[in-house]
Length: 422
Image (tube, rainbow, N blue to C red; front, side, top):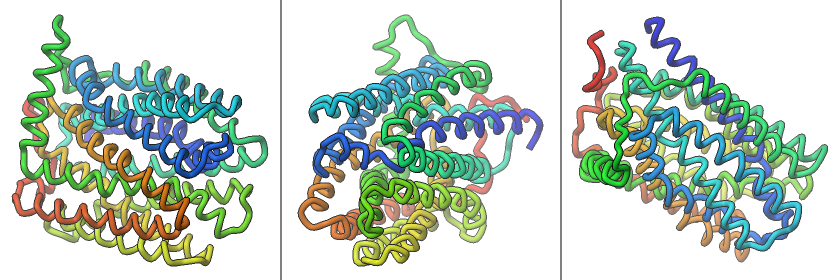
């Protein structure tokens, strides 16, 4: 890796570290926060579903902003939107607001995250290729996941401990403060290189053109389409499981106010992200096709979730949670590299945002019924059901594999059309 590529990677890791740290302060206690505000399980997971609905609604429009106005602009807008909507969440908790207000602000939270999804990853890939980087994407994306995991570990544990010492609202205020700092960092360090935004005096026409090209290179591209169609089942279940584990572990532990235990669930997932990011390029080196990793991960994580639903022992649940998180995390950089090697630079952010939209749409559909199942049958039964739903993703991954795209066996980055010769 040359000096220019190392600089790009350092900026990417810095942005990933700060963004994940800010977000993760509340990840370990979010469900408890909603329940403490007076919401039922159904309402709490419905609020989460409105969050993912916001991501569904705004993924493509914000992806178009990233491709049409720049990935830096998108990132800066994301920090401002997420900071403002997080503070509104804090205010709703203080006044024990009615459910409809939680639904509205949850949609705004989803909007904030959509400015990041697709934009940062697209910025990284294009900048790396412009700088002359010729290696595979898995090691770089894996390092990003490791840094994200470290930040999530620190943020989620700190959020749980701080909530226990103070109250459930303080971690939300910490998130706002770090996001404001990240705005300043990104403003100074993040500049679009290897990519020229196609700003147009006719924004609606430009939006239609970018969206049309993105559909052409996304849903109309069979191997990409099948990976996207798998996302609602795998990502939708992941949304539910992550948040359901907080009250489930407290239930098994036997102390409903041990918020640090709830933070432990997020911390385990974070540690698994670090391990998964480190393992991903090594596992990739052991198999010929990237889809082999994706299929094995899909089957393995589904089996573990079903097993998790049948345990009533706290430490066994922790072991199974760790296994699920590691198996799932190890596939993420491989999936990212697989998709990026099949997407043209000019539509990269929008296609990646559309892929995120597909995953978020699964969260909208899956979370409320699983939350209702938790109300009626208990968290254990809902986790077992989530494992059954998650395995539906596997046939779609096998369908993508059958298309035999070159990206499935790629060992190095595919040169971008607008990259200079190295």
